[in-house]
Image (spheres, rainbow, N blue to C red):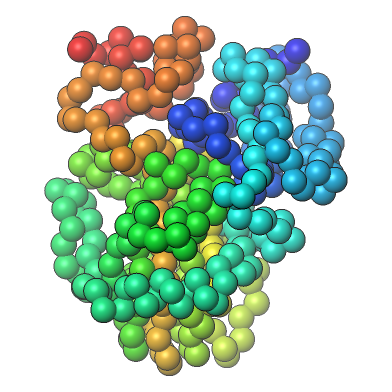
Length: 366
């Protein structure tokens, strides 16, 4: 058995919460592709530490995709990575009445730097219209988080209006929440409520990061690891989502149908029903500056969208400032395996943010 440390795969324990075993098929494709990229970049590093890969990453990728093609309706089938942090079953695929159908042919990888994926037809037209109807009479001016205090403040950086839905608002919203968790491979409890946003003519959101610069918000579930941006309407002109720092911005062809704003980076046009998934953290839980993104001004028409922010840990179970606790059930086991020294940023933390296993690493007292 080949035992691979988290650093060799380039994946931190923070990326996959062990609090929920209800991890479904959808993001397995994304996960495999992420591993493929991580392995490709880090193979030489791993070789230097004398770890031998028993299976070439390309073979692993091919076999995994073949598995999904042959068995699309797997029920409680576990994928095992022997010896990975001492655990046998890491991924659990489930389907059933509560699971939304997943069509991997609708998912396209847009970029590796940052990691971004588009799911065509993630929402039905009826679901899009339903979210708009729930929000349209309850909209308020959108705010941004202050970098020092973490409090929401008004800013010309963000000129849209919006409102938050309840996670169990109704069956449709609950179903969308479940579908997002299935696709992103992240537990529902790690997510904020869905925010429905409305952009009128000229309204925008300047380029920004979804991870936090203040300590206050980092304690409320940690950094945002992923964002799912769902487009609820078509936009006649403008309103694109743009990634100014994307390494692929120079290779994307653009004609006169794109706004000038969209030409400043890799851009995605809003198309009703589509969903954009991108990650604000690297697989090792380090913030990704290439995830800088913004919403271009609406030039003609209007734009409706719904945003789901997902954190590295539960957003519902908040840890009090200064409290000495572990925020993952496997912290003690990771600490015993030496992860406090191997992965100090996640386990112990830094001056900017507390770690998730401080108690097991014995850097605080209860």
